[in-house]
Length: 151
Image (tube, rainbow, N blue to C red; front, side):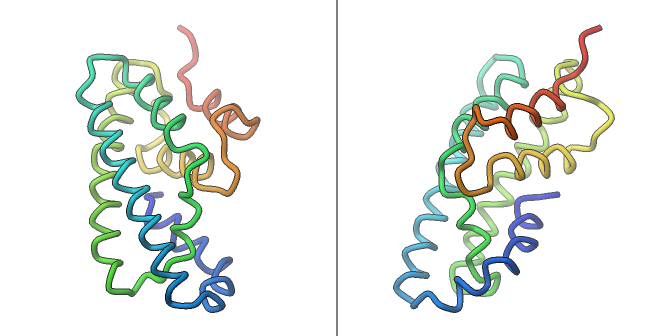
């Protein structure tokens, strides 16, 4: 599951909020979402360039995302003047994230029985929800379940 699929699934749950918000509120939410996605994209690019285990890059991404307003993405309309830019940012996140997941699987630190899309979907559940924290039980259990078993 990609970031965009997660956002569209949860959009139905938040559609009432979206319809109640005024255009100024939506513009502010859009600005926050774009800023958050840009920071995530930049963080992933920096992590991908580091010579550290890919598992550490994934953990760094989770720590970076936890507590950020990624849940806001689901409250934004899919068709809006800003949606093209937002979707472009999502693609710029999904591609390197998929590569990092594949590299973590190749290095043996991440389970190999899941596709990169499935791993990204689980990470979305962990960090794209209100109140997400890197050390909360849900995130910890998910990360423990993604870690490759010791040989």
